[in-house]
Length: 537
Image (cartoon, rainbow, N blue to C red; front, side):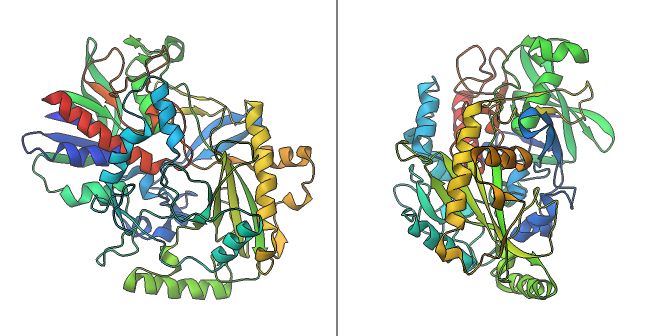
């Protein structure tokens, strides 16, 4: 088989590329996706994520783990990633966040021309079909439906009031370049009557409506093993499908869209990377590129939680189970109810010190008790609040565990390896506790969980954080964009030194953005599609 473009990975960026490149009927596109169709009921129903993310329902989740983390008392971190069309947009909390203006301006300052805020904003708008309509900051007719939450729980009003009691301003739009404040997230959820309340993954937005295009071939269950190369040119992909090893050829370009954990692994399996990373596994070096797999950044997250006597949220109880059945039934009728909840309904972007130029922590206020990614369950009801440092200083890496291309990569975020991260996390935990202990939330508070009620000193908070913190699912940077010696791709996302090959996903981010990474990944796909089309003329 031969196609003009071969896309490896049908996630957030890959789905965008498949749609945009196949708009030209003279161009042939093949999309390889390791997982399945990404359209089952647990994906379509937002609350279904509680079964997928912890790994209870396995087909849609790679369920990776990190290597033992010295900064977390030697614990292995959990790294759920989406497996199936839509990628992680099919299992995430659906929060539509772009980051801050300065994030993208910093990318440009690092030598990545065309990636400043003013240059990427049109691609965010092109992607977006916002329920609020279009304006100078938002799009109203793009494929990605961005909605108000269907029925946020009343406890969110208390969360917002708690913020007001601490003089935190309320924000109604976190996506105008300055996201400081407290409010409710907008979400990537359908608002049209036909699918109202369903998850709008990247595949549901971009890919499913065009699957019948004759010039687009989508192969699911196809796990990429390595690239084929002729000298310093990528010519195709070797993949495993239904137990057989197959090859697909790319006449123009191979577009690697497998995410920050898998894209570097595929490059390394192909002999592209740091010789010191390849040599132990007997992989012949084809092209030396020392930055492959380096520069891993992720948002380390710490959660505070309280038991509550309020049953109007998610929880495990007899009455809660009966109520949930009613909510599931109502969601099937009209797309509303608690079954449409994203769990993390409340939002805040805050400064841990008034002298800071912009927010340095993010909060996700959750209408359930959260413990170890919901892998540990507790009887009863409650609420939680995630807190992460937005721009971590720690840098990790992704390398190979073995020469087996089907094995999981070795993921080492090196959490808290830079002491500045712990300092901010302690300040953030204290500030989060202040909000949760504010008078407005008193009617909902019953008992603080996990021993954090005993945290008083910095040493107490450090122990809490090192004992319980883990990712909030935003790995980036392992194929970073730039012009320096450790850059993997240039500002057009072409791999340095290899023709016919680009990386198009969150791995190209030189620095982690100040928020959730799904909307930026789709923006990257939109911008890359235009660059690819322009270079083909």
